[in-house]
Length: 181
Image 1 (cartoon, helix red, strand yellow):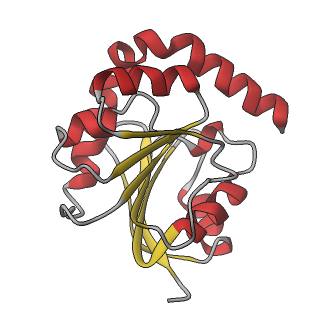
Image 2 (cartoon, helix red, strand yellow; image 1 turned 45 degrees about the horizontal axis):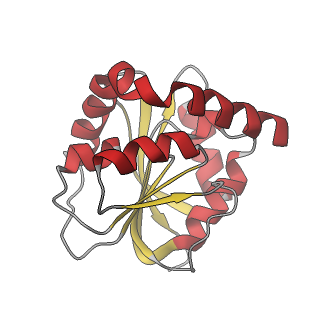
């Protein structure tokens, strides 16, 4: 498991300087489709798991100051911090999020779980970090995750699916909330 995490970190560290050029359009398309389904307000505290270079912040155009961008790749975060000097960037493994329980009103996890050796561990961490009335927004590559696999994973992690749909670009998208609240 550590070998896969090391490889993911190494790969994203190596591509950090040109990541935005390669993936900006794809990620913006995903954000547009996702955020057409949910509302965000200024008082919310949001965690972007696997947020790398801060493309979510680019999408939000710095309208919200309460977005925490968390990633395992230090170089990706460094690129993000260069663009968004006053934003919050935290280098951390998604299997061990360094935040207190019930902290975030929304947690965004776009195109991340395919890079994680055991997504159930990350989903448990997300569950713990999400407020009782909070919302998880997750996407996963359709070539690796089916509807039924996503449903099973979220059920095991104690999430209720509010909506599951296919994005126009390569991903399934899910909006979920905690079951036990």
